[in-house]
Image 1: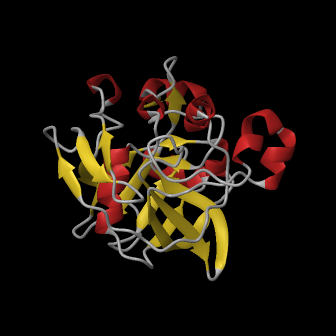
Image 2: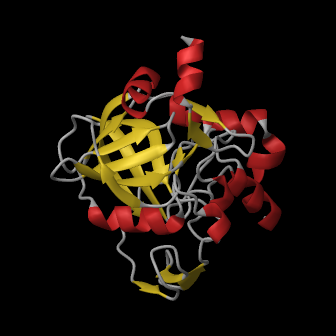
Length: 245
């Protein structure tokens, strides 16, 4: 089971989760700064140690920061840009809090407007019937679900997007693989460092509006980007854009 859990943490498929009430666990900081180690309360009140994020993963584009925001969304809106690999929480005064994210294959299957209708701390996770059927060796042992905890691929928190009463199956969640943040992954939706999703979880109320950008919206607002050899996104040099045009 430990091996299966670790494999899932690296490659999370789109999945449904059991409907359980939102939780607000107690959190204490162990390290310094937002990415330091923390002790959190698990699904059954047990202490869970969350390791500090390694400095190597805290690149400029991955690190949480307040930036000027040139979108049109109202303050309080979450904006997901799966192409630039950013998540914004829009603030007053033309600013936003920006987070780096990892984007799985399912992270580009939805675009447009939605609402946060469910929040879950240490969420459980259940593979879909299709996942069990196509990869029984990996997902078969978990067909009845995997409880929340340190080995769950959804990480410490999850936000669930709905359109009206319909679950879009689009998730914003934590990860047990911090090295993936800022990169494209083979599966899953939108992942943040556990520390970032925990703090975002506490900031936003139920009913928070969400906008998931299209690729054309991303290019218009973020400019053209290119993936570097190590898997991160970076701006295309102006002379390269002019040459391409």
